[in-house]
Image: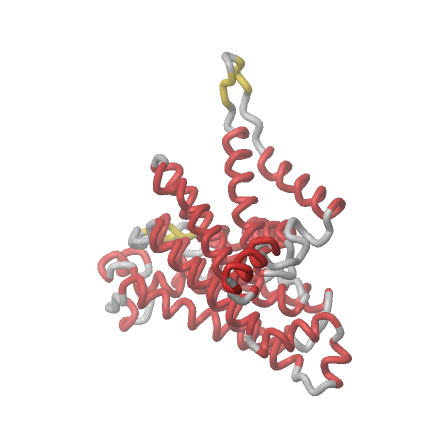
Length: 342
């Protein structure tokens, strides 16, 4: 098997293995596993743009929010919409597309927004592009917070159907993995990574850097939008604050800690930080160990994740995976080749 395909199957196996505790544990464990899969979809979507272009984006949480709310308009039962969102257009109030129909609407609107915003973002480079995405996040957050007829503003929007279980979340995570893998393996992904290493040389070779970056930005926005739709229909509630700075820095930490220039880094970072974050959350609530009562320690989760990120940046700047993709060890490939030759 080609090393490229080994990466896909190994990462898919890792995702399935990470979801296993959700099937074997309690309801709380299942909810944790679902949230991990939702975050995994977000980080994989983010990596489509960041890993292939080398440009950090601080604005992708906005796409998750846009997709989450736009999907909710078409999945909340009409009778509930008339109570909580009575000012929506009549055709929207009367339409119920179901979860997958709402997912399609949310993903398409996120991609369309990515196309509009991306035209400006790809004209910039480096920190300028990153700051532009942060400005977009702030604009989106302010808009969603003040358009009460669309989102209920700073109040929570309730009534979303609870239709996302662990199998659905895992399936979408695997689909996002396949999309990201195929994009990275395509000629477009190859040319983008060439421009990431030397933009001037890539442009001189005839590569349309801006156009390819725009394509990556739009696809990235669509996949991240899917994570927003999953989140809303996994917990049944939406609030604007769910899609702002906390989500932005958590998902960026996952990508950077894992290795921001590889798909393997995105998957490993998301899964590792999800488990570590859950352990720290448990510690933050206080616990008893061998009769010793440890008092609650609010904020230890955030502090712990920050320390981990600093440690990785200092000791392993390329992330846990070293920006390399997972492949089978060389000795297994040699053994398989020897068996074939016999």
